[in-house]
Length: 154
Image 1 (cartoon, rainbow, N blue to C red):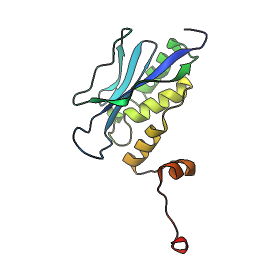
Image 2 (spheres, rainbow, N blue to C red):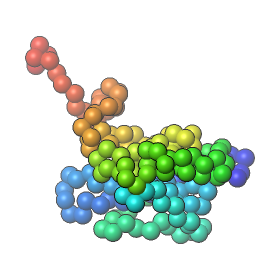
Image 3 (tube, one colour):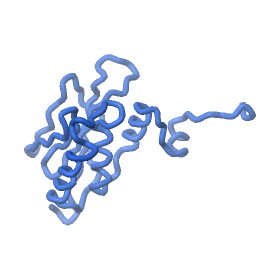
Image 4 (cartoon, one colour):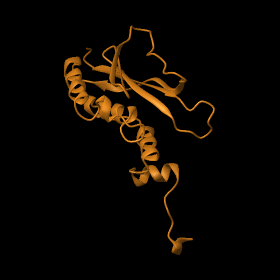
């Protein structure tokens, strides 16, 4: 690891095909030369050779956020793999996978928090839209529009 830390990259694929306006993505992160993703079969780790890309999911098209560095982590590979192992017996075990409420986006965001890098805000927005929770801050709503006006403001 360099003194600046190890890079953490995101790889995202659009899985919506020709469906206009759909928000169907698959997301994983690459750190320490290993690609980590959460699927219905659990957390999958794939070693990636320098210059290579993670395997494309069936029907996936690389998005604009393909191979983007999210930041650098000061954690060690061993620390991160210990964390990943703990997640395979907790929140992110195979039987807990849910396409809406516990998916690759939730895993990648939690992994980023553990690694000490910021996950893209679009992950929070996408997860909120999928789950219907809309748990985003007012400044974000202001940027992207939305919210309600009271009858008195109309």
